[in-house]
Length: 215
Length: 215
DNA sequence: CATGTTATACCAACTAGTCGGTATAAATAA
DNA sequence: TTATTTATACCGACTAGTTGGTATAACATG
Image (cartoon, rainbow over all chains, first blue to last red):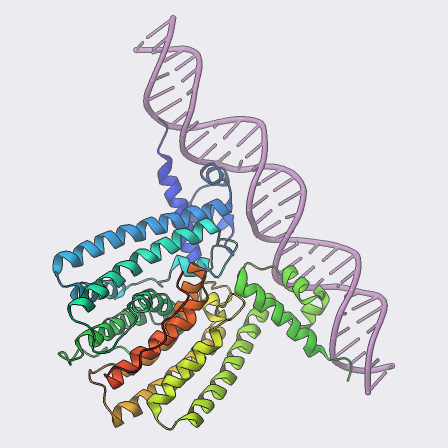
């Protein structure tokens, strides 16, 4: 067998991801992708038959990685607590933690794609939808279990509430970039966590440490 | 005065906005902007000295329009109720209403820009930040007034809570595009409204009409 | 006429994608 | 062992078309 092509392939995808997060993949030229990957045009078109195929493969890889993250994170919180509400709260905490002190400018590939419809094929859209639903369904299920055991003081639509997790997440990326303050992401996820807790417990809990950096 | 150039200018901006919402302004060519506006290159470069200037002017116009909307909406809710909490809840209702039965694929110019940094000049960023803060500050102020009069059952960071309005909003656009279901926007804003109400009132209220369309 | 507005023709740089060819390395065979 | 084959992986010059931007002339209107 010749040398391993998957290395080159991943270098191309990595380069494309970086460009997608900054200038947007639609606006990035293949020459830039190629330069970033440190390869040549020939190599690129050996691995991908077009720029659109690159876009699709990139989002598919993203969805796979996100799925792995989901499996890992849910397994962890389910092993940390048996209480479904606690599991949701822990998941929020875990997620917020991931974005605390994140050095680079965070963002979401899906959000970037859905404002650049050249990249937004039906295949890509469906892959993203599936991935979103995976998280949403899990949270919704847990919230419903929690509600069965101990109904919240105020009725709430648990489907919408679960959906809100992703909404806040995606929105926080936009805010972080607009305010130029990545800390917003962890802050908003935390705020969501607190709202859920308040809704289900309805009683004050030990005061949370105040967020320090609020320029 | 010779004939009115502001008409052409606005046609250009309208065309650019439409392209920005679909394929992204960075990926859109000037020829497409020009074709959409039904004019020629000469006319374009008479009104804008470059594509980047177009991008900046477009986002500035967006911010102006959003500011007008803010002034109008807050004035309306402040005339409808004297209770700050009610005002916030009404504002959410008003906002959700705006996106109910929205025919075209909704989206936010700011979100699109912040994933395409060719367009994301510091000037543009600051204009967007200012506009975001206008809404956030107003909501935060109202929530603090409301909390003073009748503190929520559970302590909550009202700054984060106000910030969450925009986060949910921006996130809902992404979800709407990913799920291909514009109804999500009104739904999420409504869910936010309900959370705020639950937090401050803490008692059940007349059951809301169930959302009907949930494919 | 003078000023503001629009059209046509054009350019150099860049675009996605092609193509003939080369390098690598394992498998086969003498 | 060594020569040959085979398939994968990669290179870089090339093309046809597009890009943002310019030059210049024509048109409209007061």
